[in-house]
Image 1 (spheres, one colour):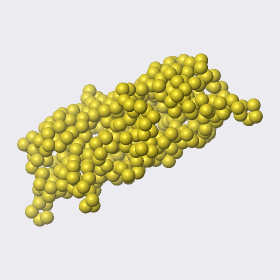
Image 2 (tube, one colour):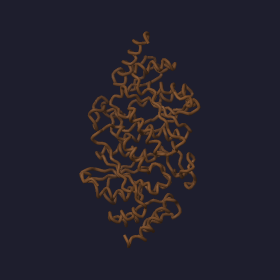
Image 3 (cartoon, helix red, strand yellow):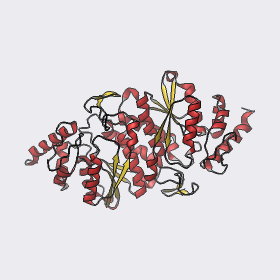
Image 4 (tube, rainbow over the protein chains, first blue to last red):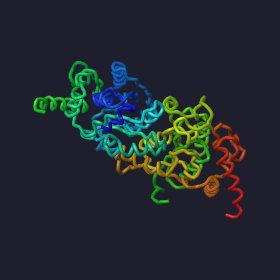
Amino acid sequence: MDESFEKEKALVLMSGGQDSTTCLFWAMRNFKKVSAITFYYAQKHEKETQIARHICAKLNIENKLVDMSFIKDVVISNLFEGSGDVYQPHPLNAEVPSSFVPYRNLLFLTIAAGWAGTVGAKHLVTGVCETDYSGYADCRDVFIKSAQATLNLATDFKESNIVIHTPLMRLTKAEEFRLAEELGCLEFVLKETLTCYNGVETMNDFGKGCGQCPSCGLRKKGFDEYRENRVIV
Amino acid sequence: MDESFEKEKALVLMSGGQDSTTCLFWAMRNFKKVSAITFYYAQKHEKETQIARHICAKLNIENKLVDMSFIKDVVISNLFEGSGDVYQPHPLNAEVPSSFVPYRNLLFLTIAAGWAGTVGAKHLVTGVCETDYSGYADCRDVFIKSAQATLNLATDFKESNIVIHTPLMRLTKAEEFRLAEELGCLEFVLKETLTCYNGVETMNDFGKGCGQCPSCGLRKKGFDEYRENRVIV
């Protein structure tokens, strides 16, 4: 990590899940000042916005909430409240799960960049990860790099060019638990975060959620792996 | 123009101004089917959304209206209703006019790409122009090309990759009037469109608007030039 970042402000894209919460702790360690932004977009697991706010309040982090529920009237996804089964293929591409919300991450990053300019931050931190990206193209490193270039070309505010940080990009879920341990937030992540697509809270349940959805599956597998390897690491 | 486009669908980003209306006629000439998308974002010249809808209704073009008024709570601009003087420098960069809305065009293009996927269009048409771009970085060709790459990396929907068309990119205002003449829509453009920042309608007034704002200034200068050169072209 570039030491100069210690004097600067970062804005964390905060969903209330394991990934973004781990990123929040990572940012708190690496930047002088950290704030957060959370998006409501009529997602099935709407509870995550409440949990994001709850986590930020607990950590004394300012959190900007942006209502982007207009997305559900624009793009097709089964992640929206009242829509179909998230396990089916996406109607626009059979290779992609129907939980995919086209352009979601680009919208989030763009709005976050706008808010970062308003509060004087130039660093964005997001928990996207391409190791187990589940067919979500907008979690890949190549997308994030391209988005950063596009955001900076959109404003030409040279001295305050946006930098996007993705501390989880190449980690497995097990390695992410390990990072949380190193950051001293493993117990917090396990007890306070919500990752489940079906909105089943994991409070005091060590990473289980509903145990059925793809997100819970990934989390459980990762936690088991992390525990198995813990002694020998 | 690639002849294969004649069999395809295009979505025009429609503000109700001269530029987007000329683009709408350009798209109607070049594509099999054309629809439009209009954004309400608490802009001072809110009348433009009504005019955009009026123009589309007149031309029998479907128009999707998207409310993006959340932008005014996220980014800084004097283009929003109730904000300060649009002639001042922008607080985030003194070289940019305060009417600049950071990331506006990226948000518009991203939402338009989302809607294009939903209605089965892969071509977006936007009236941005770098010839007289007024310090708006997101009107430059380099930004548009980068945005197209980012949008397609965001979805990886290979067969339906988005193509962004910018028929006005390198035209002067006078050349744009000339294009409108070629497309047979000059009178329509002069009588029906609204370009003025202050929302003064140009109906039956051949491109004058309030006559004071930068946008009216550009339009008037361009129209005068077009008229002067008309006989000799």
